[in-house]
Image 1: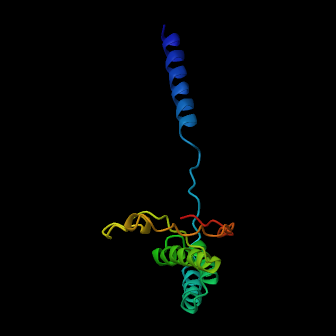
Image 2: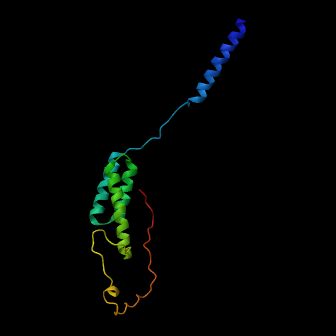
Image 3: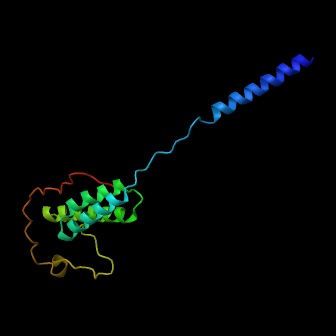
Length: 143
């Protein structure tokens, strides 16, 4: 009787030990974040200089390197996001095609059409049809 009880207790202890060993990983490691504050500060300085010159695509590259050097830097992230927006705006401006939806502006007075003002006036001639070239974004940065 004692031997059966001893075998049962030994089996339960072994099962418990095996269950705990399988439930808890042997070694939990967190991914290392490489923080290089000096490199981040240097890239921020270069990026700010390029940004002040109006070279937003170069500034974006410097700010991206600053974010890689120190992902915890709020200044690096803020300047990186800002340079992305300015770079895209410059690409749209260079393309010369800013599309307006034609929707009414909130708070603006409603516009009257010339045909509604004078029913006898002829409608304006149609605009020549041309195929507009859309602005091309080379690389989507995402935020």
